[in-house]
Length: 492
Image (cartoon, rainbow, N blue to C red):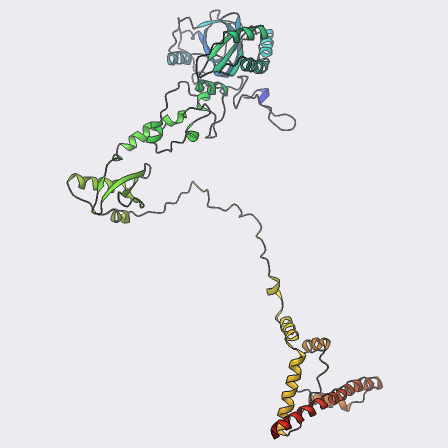
C-alpha cells in the first residue's frame, strides 16, 4: 500500500515524501528504514497465552525504542501513539508488535524490566498530530540557523540533523566532530534563539550516513540505513585479500570511511585462498628463479616472472604451480615456465546470460550513403573530347600539314582532299564528336543525288562547296612554299 505522498499529481510526476527512497509517513508497510517483516502476523497464539505487551515504536530517521502498553490500549502496526519522553511526551509510529519484539530486544540486549523500556500513554489525537507535524516543519529552518550560530562561535563541528520532540518543547541536535567541543555557549544561544530545551548528541560518521540515508555506488540504498544495525570495523586487509587496488576514492563510502560491504564476501575469499600457495614463495626452474606477480582467485590462475627477466609474465594454473612446488620440495628443478604456459588451452566459453556487446548500438540506424567523387562520376566520352580540345594546338596542325605535303611530293601521287573537313572551330568539333560515323555511305549518297532536289536545298548545298574551294586556295600557297624549300634542300 502507498500513502498519498507516494501518488502522482495531475501531470503524472510522483509527489514523493523526500525521504531518500523511504516512506516518511510510515504507512507504506515495510518501506521505512530498518523495517522488520512480521511473518507471524497471520498466526494465532496458543490458547491461554496472552500477547506480548511491549511494542517497538519508530521515530525520525529509523530511531527506534521499546515501550510497554500498561493501559492495554488496542494497538496495531502503523498506529500513531503518544509515548513517554524525557520531559513531556513524544509522538511515534508502531513499527513492530507481537512475538518478534522479543527477538529484537534480545538482539539489542534490552531486558523487559529495564528503565529504558518506557510507557505508552494513548493513541495520538488529531491535536497531537497537528502539533507533531508543525514541529517537524520547523526542523529545516532550525538546522540552518543553528549552523549560522556555530560558524559565528567558530566551533569545529558539523551539525548534521535536528529532531524535535512530538510536543514541540525539546529539540535534539546531532553533530559530528573530530575532537572534543565545548558547546556550553552554543546551548545558551540555541535555547534563547528558539525558546526550547536543547540536547546535543554526538554521532559517528557511519551513524550520520545511516540517519540521513542515500544511494551508494552500487546503485542501491545504503545498507546502514536499510538493514544493517551493527557497525563492524573494516580494515584495508579486507581489500588486500580480495585483490582490490588500495584506492581510497573507490573503497570509501558516503561516510568517508571504508565500505561496510568489504566484510560481506571476505569469508568466501579467505576459504578460496587456503588452496593457493603463499605469495612470497619462489619457484626454482631451469631458466632461473620465478617470483609471484598476481592471481585470479575465481579462474584459479597465477602469474609469475623471472627475477632477471621481469618484463615478461607467465600465466600458470593452480595445479601447475603446485606441481612445481612439489618438485622443489624434492630438491628438483622444474622445466622453464614457457613450457607450462604452452600447455594451458583457453576454451571459448559461450555466455548466454551476458549479452552486453553482442549487438551494435547503431543496428537500427539508416545506413549512410557513400559520397561519390565528382571526378570519377564523369563519363569517359566527355573526357576524350575535353582532352582532344586541350591537347590540339595550331602549331601541331601546321607541322602535320607540312609532313603530308612532303610525303605527297616524293610519291608524285594526287593528294586526296578530305571533303568532310571543316574549319577547326570548337563548334564543329562538338558536332563531329556527337554524330556517329557511318561506313559505306557512297551508295546512299549516289541514290540521293539522282533524286531531284528543291531550290532551297540547292542553295544551301552550294555554300559549303564554296567554302571548300576557299580553303583549298588558302592551303595551296603554303604547299608551294614548302615544296620550294624541299627542292632547295635537295640541290644543296
